[in-house]
Image (cartoon, rainbow, N blue to C red; front, side, top):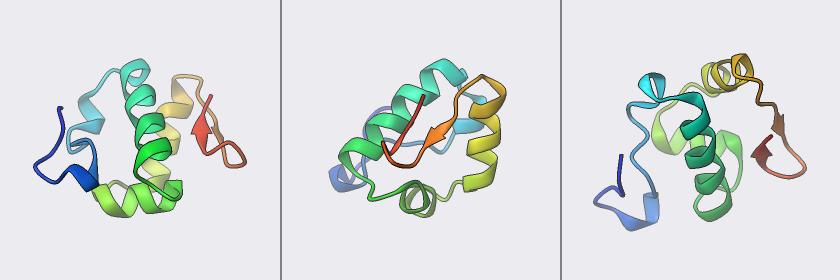
Length: 72
């Protein structure tokens, strides 16, 4: 769950489904702030289904705010 070998890519989110959603939201928001142009870009870069991520974090009470580019 640390930095991947490629610093430009950011965090290794390959185990996102197994992560605690309260930890995951922090990692995702950091990626959005530091490495991704959008949620779609983050999902493509990390090979994560965007809808699955939104639904998973939504179940934990987090909603993606596009204008802020972060989950809240």
